[in-house]
Amino acid sequence: MTKVTLIGAGNMGGALAKGWLRAGQISLTVADKNPQSLRSLSQAFPDTNLLSVTDDNIKAVQGAEIIVLAVKPWLMQPVIDEIKQAVDTTRQVVVSDAANFTTDRLAEAFGRAGQYAYAIPNIAAEYADSMNFIAAGKDFTEQSKSLVSQLYDSVGNTLWVEEKQVAAGMMMASCGIAYVFRMIRAMMQAGVEMGFYPAQAQTIAEQTMLGAVSVLRNSGLHPEAAIDKVTTPGGTTIKGINEMDMSGFTSAVIRTLKAGLK
Image 1 (cartoon, helix red, strand yellow):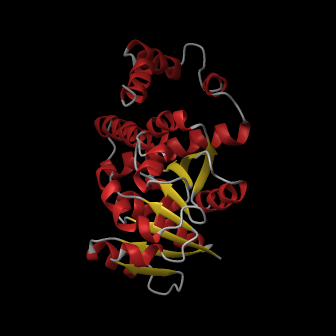
Image 2: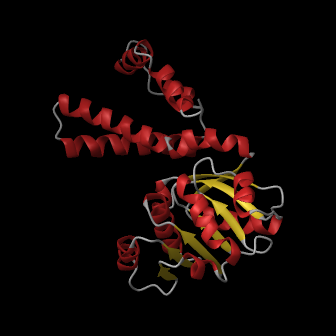
């Protein structure tokens, strides 16, 4: 069983920890300076022997095969300064889950070459539905890639990309999940205006979103071909589609996804 250390149990780190523990495929040590975060995680998984928690980062990395750093970008250097003498970067895999903290920045922070990767998942990892983007550093081995793939595949869909593509993946999937939440919220607002209670409107919006994804995944259809299946000539759907286009919906989505790349 792969031994994994996760430093950082905040929103993203906590989601990864919960997803990995539910998958049950690894032995996980979680380190965090916030005792409440560790306590909450332990309380959520009281019966597992796969989890250990600590506030000692140096102790946490000892014996780990994979070390995942899921702290805020501005905390990465202090954390690395703390643990780097205890980490063997030629044998232990180090993964950055911090935005824009690339493999080159990891090598610079540790002050030496090593088995470095840069990964961007999203909070759906908690429910094994994350879209994960991972880039490997120049010294990354196939064995390490296999280990990291298994780890992230257990909490979602993993795509290995060139490091320059990770930022775009982050906008589409990590930031993008918030944009989907906003779309659902907008559908809810319309539903309430049309006479549904908020809880009903949320259920309708969520199920509609799930249904749309299910159609595309199971049929292999391009979204435009799927749209054609529900747009009767002169019908109500095409009127709504045209209103979306006239309101600049497509342009707004594109601008939103590109905004973080500026």
